[in-house]
Image (cartoon, rainbow, N blue to C red):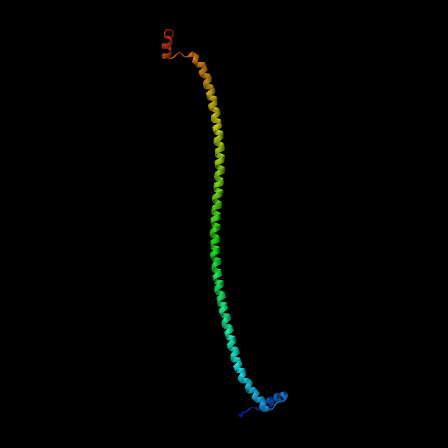
Length: 161
């Protein structure tokens, strides 16, 4: 084993003595264990720091991937919302067309009813006029002179001159 000489202040020397007495070891053993723990501790600290940096990098990578996924999902949601709005507009336009067609159908039914009533009135008027015409033709037929052909064929020309 090698020997090392170290200069210490009185207060630190007093603390070293107290800690060595508590641990029931010599001052030399205490200083040697302190140096050893400092060396292995700094290596251990380096290893721990390296591991923590690796974990931090891994976590940052995961966060970045999740942010990308969130961005993709947000874009997908926006696209779906646009598609839904477009479909909603199409549905509203189709609904308006259906309502317009329904209104046109109701108007056509009302017009058909009006025309039907008008046709019935005209049919009744035509029936009345036919009846009146047949009554007039029955009254007029005996009072009219026969046609020229009929008069010649039946030799009635003598009476109608």
